[in-house]
Image (cartoon, rainbow, N blue to C red; front, side, top):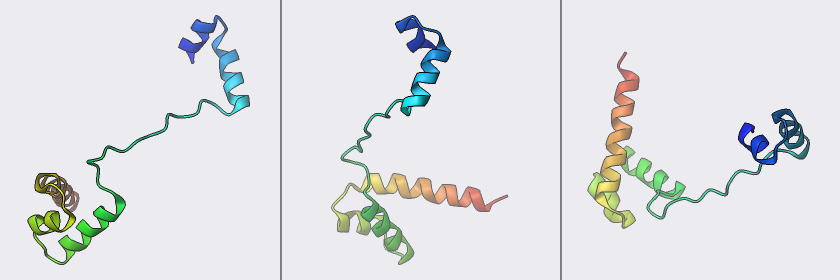
Length: 86
């Protein structure tokens, strides 16, 4: 807010009051990358892992890159291990 106040040559409290009264600044619209996993794909991966399917089979079934799933599942697996080891 201080940078906005400097640009419009007003005290920061004025900028704060104005934004508070008018509801603030709208956040930018967020976009997901095309490579990002959708919620449905995440659920399919979770079901596949719980059924004991290989990462290769899950990636083939979803027509996605094997590397993408291997990295994500390995990260998840190591996080689960680290959470359960005290």
